[in-house]
Amino acid sequence: MRHIYAYRITYLLAALIVAAAVLFAWLRSRELVLVPEGEVVGEATTTFRGDRYQEACTACHAEVTYLGELAAANGGRDYLVDMFLFGLEGEVLIDGSRQQLEHQPYGDWADDAIAETLNYMLASWGNQEALLADWEPYRPAEVAAARQLELAPDEVAEKRPALESRE
Amino acid sequence: MNRFIAGIFWILLYLVVVLAPMFIMMIRPTAPGRSFWVEFSIALGFVGLTQMGVQFLLIARYRHVTAPYGIDIILQYHRQIAIMAFVLILAHPAILMIHNPDLLGLLNPFGGTWASRSGVGSILALALLVASSLFRQQIKLDYERWRLTHTLLGFVALVLGHAHVSLAGGYLNTVWKQALWKVFGATMLSSLVYLRLIKPALQKRERYRVAEVRRERGENLTLALEPVGHQGLRFAPGQFAWLKLGKTPYTIEEHPFSFSSSSETVGRLEFGIKVLGDFTSELKNVPPGTGAYLDGPHGAFSIDLAPAAGYVFIAGGIGITPMLSFLKTMADRQDVRPVLLIYGDRSWDGMAYRDELEQLAQELNLTIVHVLDKPPPDWRGETGFVTADLLARHLPQEKIKREFFVCGPPAMMDAVQAALLEQGVPLESIHSERFNLV
Image (cartoon, rainbow over all chains, first blue to last red; front, side, top):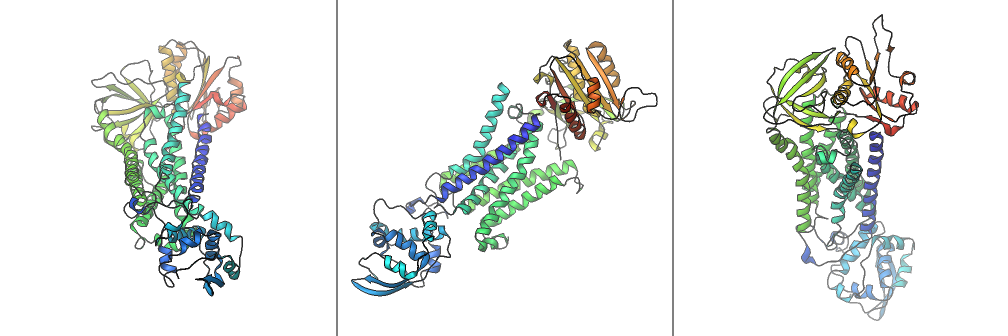
């Protein structure tokens, strides 16, 4: 009889352990943390990784210093995610005049890659100073939800907030 | 009730030890969260690794831990959860590589990073450990060599697994998390030090010597030990101990044997042993005075843990040994409770302890039913195996609640248990001890 109870408890413990792993993954996938560089230990980092930005974006632009202002503008948060996912093509208002602007899409990147790269950019080059006090970092789930919109590049251009650009 | 509470306590503690390190890693500051599947693979790696570490605690034979369940249950769990831990650890890189095929290059031990190399090394050691355990007999690896290999591979797998986590960074991103992880790993490995170094050192203080090796009917013998310079150990009838012979308790050659003597006897201990392999064959020639060491007592297969108005003991072959201890103990206690013993063996001439049992039947309220597979021509008793029909003929008809103890080859125990259930015996009244040793 002990052995039969033991089998049942073994399966129960195995299920509980896997369930705990699922819970951990769910909690962590919803959690993005922005902390100072000073808490870095060894090779591990607690800031957002910028390796994808370095690989894919620096061919066209180095530092993007107006992103914080753009993100803090009305509709800006959604606009940045849409631009990343669907690209951008159309006339936008820059420095008071309408100019043609294009940006290729990166919709083939995973949700967490897009979220982290956006957060990296917003945490760099002084952009964080323009963010509002209640700013929440992008999360993979937010990017996943935005994918459902399936916007065209010109539709993304129409959503761009009007602001003074430094570019 | 105390056993039940203790059993629940150890299970909860086990869950805490396996799961806590993973959730502690969530304490800020942490690396940014990633997609669900990436984090799930990390979680599986964590819990697989912590389960691997806890395996060292399970095999350390801590009596307070094993007592609520019986050490045979702990060993059974050790084997089963090892397979699960291995699958979880394999799932960790598999999910990562399905999610991002670029990571396949990390499987190359000559490429990748030191983190990936240590991870690959850990998995390889674990795979060898599992394979050598599952197929030990097919690859003809003798038991002692297997134990040594098993310990070494487990050690290597755990150390490399911990190195992988430390080198991968990510979650171990603070000094205190790194330290905690190292303390966890060291604590798990300390059980190995306890079992192989500290316990033998303690055993040196409680040495035994071989008093007698007595041939019994069939290929069986009784080994009698006397304590040297101490009172000996006390055990409950039906328990067993691991035995080491020779001058040193540090030998890895040790085997479990059931006590066949009365638990009321102080000092001299007797074990009933069937000659099956190399070690038991050599026992026949062990001279009196040879040194011996015991790790015990262990086991939850005891009438003292199942008080009842009467008992039914069903033994096959050398499975009679713990029953002999039951009966001798009851005789010393002048216990008048009714006992039915159903004892099956191959032949009448090879039936171990037949004469002692007849003597005990004079002293106790004991009825013996012999069952022979190959009976002599003039045999009028039961033949074949213990079946439901045989039980129907012999099980007591009075309404007192009895407890049933079954011991013998695994196939026999399975068949007898099924037969008892068929006769309406409640499952909770059937007791057996199963050692699925590798």
